[in-house]
Image (cartoon, rainbow, N blue to C red; front, side, top):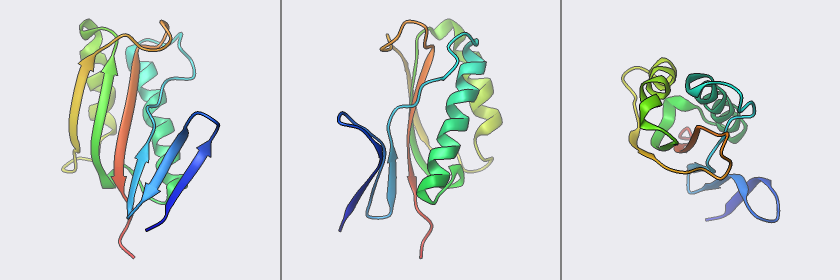
Length: 118
């Protein structure tokens, strides 16, 4: 089976596709001045874009990993997540508090999704 790499640079790809599965890199907000909910909404919108480019959508999510910088703001992240995730189709998910690569980022999300069956 072939592997395809998308939106790549020397260090990483934003998406990799193999055997009917799309793997996204961790996505971070573009506007780090937003609060936790705003940053999460930005990240989820970017995930929507990348999944669409790969030929799938959030309706086919398999798993998600979420990193937040403060559990005190966890409810804000969950509010954005709950408004975004497809009802009845939530992926398996892990979320934890962590220090991110840039101090202004409050959230990073990485997902895996299935491609539609041919």
